[in-house]
Amino acid sequence: ESTTVVVIGAGPAGMAVATLLRHSGIDCVVLERRSRDHVAQRQRAGIVETRAVRMFDSWGLTDRVLGGVPYDGILEFRVDGRSRLVSDSDGSDGPPARLCPQQVLVQKLTATYLEDGGDLRFEAADVSLHDLTGDRPTVRYRTADGTSRTITCDFVAGCDGDHGVSRRTVPDGVLTAYAFDHGIGWLTVLADAPPPAHPLLAAGREGFAAHFPRGPRASRYYLQCPPDDDPDAWPEARVWDALRTRLGDPGLVSGPITDREIFRLRSLVHDPMRYGRLFLVGDAAHIVSPMGGKGMNLALYDADLFARAVRDSVQGDDTALHTYSARCLRRVWNDQEFSHWLTRTLHDAGDAEPFLRNLARARLDRLFTSPAAASAFAELMTGLDPTGDA
Ligand code: FAD
Image (cartoon, rainbow, N blue to C red; front, side, top):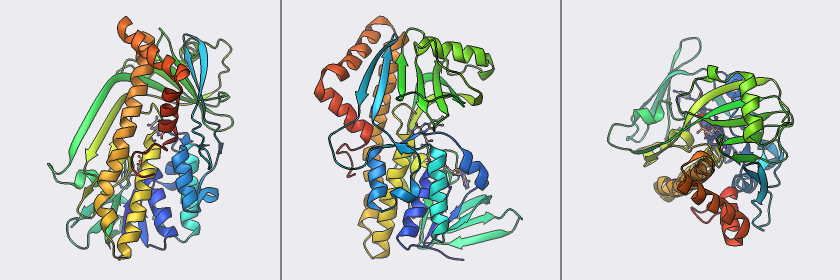
């Protein structure tokens, strides 16, 4: 069996690559380890940034792949219970960001790809990649009924996240990994509870907390905690008490908790994002700590550049394939910096030692007193900054 591109993984990166390739009339096969139901239900990110919405617009796909509602771009900061609003409005024309939960985006990309005749194989086991530095790589896997399959292709898109097989196939010493542990834990909670009026980030002596919309009747909450804390130490009553205190909202309406876990804030970049005919896309190449909401949006950026590069290559021009990694990494580092800056600012403004706490509060103040600082923040939030070539 043979195709142009084998895409490993059907998350946001893989389904964006596959949908854009299919839309360009380029053959591909998507191999996903899990079931369709599992992938369609995975809830993580919640906002498709302005740049990514306009990217889908430029492909003429917005109406088909984006669900949810337009986002007014207002973000609320609460420091010691005092509320201030910041806007990501940068005065540019064009559609704004969208409140579109990750699972809705993945479901709609999947439906679009299949409607356009795409080939998507779930429950593909033991995927392995071969001859990546040759002219025709092969990908092997086993179907759900145990049959072995081999697909020959021109390119492999490694869209299988941080724990996938693609990056692991690259020999040692080829990629440089830049890893950073923020030393911070977050308890993350999903609940069927009313969303906030605006995405809300709160700092105070009790620690950081946040409240984000995830659809019309659902919310995601974050609570700073020790990185190796035990989720069992957070029964429901403690979660809601801590949220009410840290968000400065005694009337916060609770609801059934549907998911809860603790994770360490970490960041990771692999350079380059290519090995022979394997191209790493999204979390397979980089992890951004969740503050700033950039992980899924970076995956969409990589997917756009990769699909355009393959389209050029099919027409005989490999330039964009050669510059793919450097162009992606420029945006990755810019977003890592934004995410790190926001992570430090909101955690230091709460429980850090006094000197750092005052520095962080001065940084936050500046957002509300300096139009230049507010506009730099808006540029980074929308993703419309000049880094890369959006
Ligand atoms: P993934 O979503 O990890 O998808 C990889 C796919 O590959 C999966 O379907 C997996 O099953 C499949 N796979 C893995 N191994 C194999 C294999 N061997 N063979 C075949 N298939 C395989 N980002 C934001 O932009 N904003 C946010 O607010 C935000 N919040 C987040 C909150 C949390 C709690 C977490 C954990 C992440 C958050 N992110 C956020 C990050 C975002 O979810 C990721 O950046 C995004 O999922 C990356 O997409 P991806 O397709 O690269 O990887």
